Length: 323
Image 1 (cartoon, helix red, strand yellow):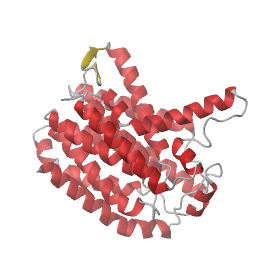
Image 2 (cartoon, one colour):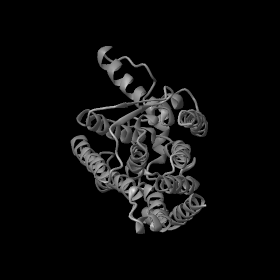
Image 3 (cartoon, one colour):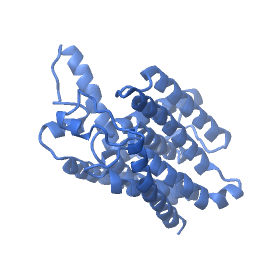
């Protein structure tokens, strides 16, 4: 019942926020600057309001405060810690978007600035989880049903890599209308089910809020998009996904559940490495992979549909490993 309420509240707040946020951002001329190296037809999207991630951030924050109030009164703050990491990453993205809008260029914070801030956020999150007695230095291996205890130093280094890498993988997935949000809805549904499986009501209400807020956002972001989530939204989503995985102590579950994030990132890495070592040749027409499919003639709606279906399959398989 509480998860249904969380979903509905976040959906309503996200959807209603879009009614005034879109015209407000248009008035501020907070439009997306399209990269010249991307698909040429994306230039028609120039000026579409960005920072739309504020819509679902608002929905999730309001929902978590309302439905998570009783757990907080009882001294249970797991959902607050998870929300904290997502919001911190969202703020990094917000300042990145703000810099781009002010400079009227598709260049925001420097790579070093973003990396340092992301590592600091991840470290603070892990420290908070460990202090609260939630974090365990164990790694559950999906599909093999085995768990290994890892020395804390190695575990924390690996955890930092997974969080920072995972957040940027979600960011890379945000490339066509509705893709990052559409893919993350089943991932959020998976974490809701997984949290219920483990009896963790705080994470289930957070992930249910995440799913509801994204559905509300998709009302405006589905092709043709009236607003983009920007780094404000994509970094928030990356933080939310990784935070849920670590709060449930199943970080490697991101591999099957977030298979699209991983494939998108691998396509980008392969493209860069092959380009350098082959002196200018390419494996894909354009990376990440969703751009390759666009160049092959796939419509954005088809790309989103196929990627969401693959994610649903990955999430079902991920859940089966937990039974």
